[in-house]
Length: 59
Image 1: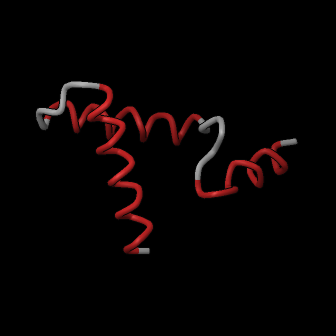
Image 2: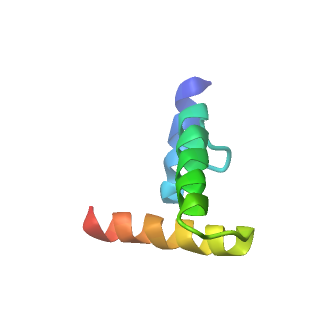
Image 3: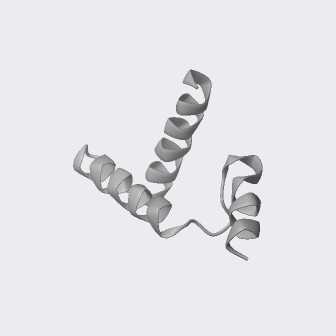
């Protein structure tokens, strides 16, 4: 079951349900962004998406 979930989670580079580790990374990243002066959830989501896309481009 765990293996199947990991394979499913890797489809498209996003997991439908983030693992605990992914969730904690997302929380940390969003906390960092909030401290950087981004205050609305919409801006956070846009910023996070841009960061993820930038990471994929670099990879």
